[in-house]
Length: 230
Image (cartoon, rainbow, N blue to C red):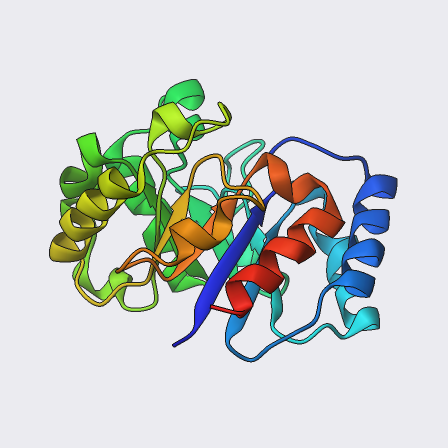
């Protein structure tokens, strides 16, 4: 079974640090066909990192956008349309709880982002939490879900170093799985080297989304190794 692990850098790093991160990661990571590694840097770093990935030729490592516009290319100042990214990334994160909270994104706006990603040939990683999981999935077009990954991230566990209990994660995964059957589900929320194995082994979990722990490339490579061994 294919496993996934996402490194969501959020709003961190400079270009110099981003390039150094990839260099250190490439020296510590041991690729395996069973694990797809997805790196989501700030959008301004996507192009230079794409060029570096071509140089390092690390197997099974892809780039993701942290967000995309809900609109196509056009008169939308400041927006980055999916079609602008289609030759640079394989995935796009949409609906992250931080986007919902700080940018007040609605279910329909997020559904529009999923549609834009799919139309551009980019696989969406739709982030959900229990309170809005069913309503968010209900807002999607059925055809847009075929290549979609789902990231489950309880709001109270993100950035607080207090992950949700495995029992609660299992309940949430069962809920999401019933609403979106057959879609890979990734857990995100205070993942680190000490707990990665425990959460990756939960039935119904197909991978992990890593936040603050991914900023250290050696630690992230270590987490990748843990997941690859499961």
